[in-house]
Image 1 (cartoon, rainbow, N blue to C red):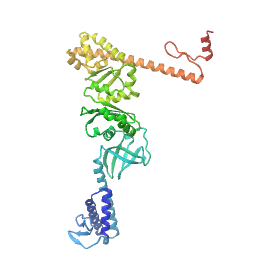
Image 2: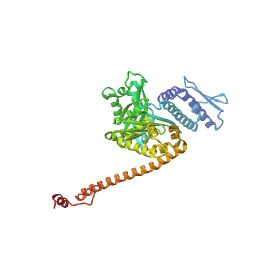
Image 3: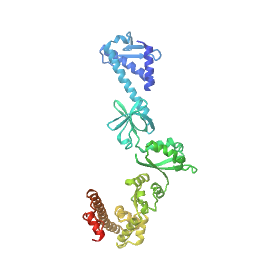
Length: 441
């Protein structure tokens, strides 16, 4: 046996696989002892021992503690096969432990790798010497990479899965954006600016609330960068995902107003009992505040931790009027009490029904029986109002559907359908008939 060559091989394996050489030498000693037991057909694990000199690589065999005058080559082909199998298995175990230890320390960090392939929707990425995967749920919707593309992602989780180490990557997790900000904005990495909260819908939009511990540093300006240079790098990495930088404030009302930007907020009413914020915006700001498919208000609610309702001034005032009319009809409830409830953020009969009698008793100083009566009356009115809203919604949908069907008939037949005073489409009328009507004949 060429011991010098054996030691060079062990050095190479330790370096390439990042395994401690001492561990490899112990594996070698155990594999030699297993080969000796196979050669002598014994099951006693203590009968044979092996020692390998760490400098020269000389192999010494012992049987029952006494030196055994036998070279590894004397063990035979079957024992050599046993030695090989034990070594392979031990090397695999050592490599798995090394990967688990190395990547376990990198959970939550940014890593960069090379895309290999897609396997059942999951993207397989090579990072250093390890193979990791990114499940479909952790990918940004619509984002496709080609083999050999370099990709930057978050090391989300590392776990021991029996014979292998599973490394889970993510580009959809909110912390991925947080790590990108730490790379692009030195003030965040240096803890001068703190990311206080974050809400994300991967591939579409993200809201990030930031605050500065140094009054001289503008957190929003620092994150955006000169002419938007810093935020542009992050947006480019995310393939155009919109990012809103929100100025953090300890006041929930101010924070909610900031979170709903670019919409302009007219008034915010907070109900601590329900964790709900009722936000009033002008009619021309309503669609902007809600956002496409409700995205802006949804992200604002997640960012602030409040359940956010967006209302126009007309809707808000109507809710207050219905609340006042309903509650003041109950004997013992005054306008002042209704105003107090409104000040506490209870701006509709739905809110009164939801908070229950105990809150009314403590806040208004009324007895429990009267509070029960108020909740009961509010519940009846809330049910009626819900039915009215449902009828209005169904009527609007029906009108919209009829108008769409009328437009479709015009496209298909060339006939025009008149619209009545109620906005609904009438029976189809030929072009000749419409011309006669217009000419008065």
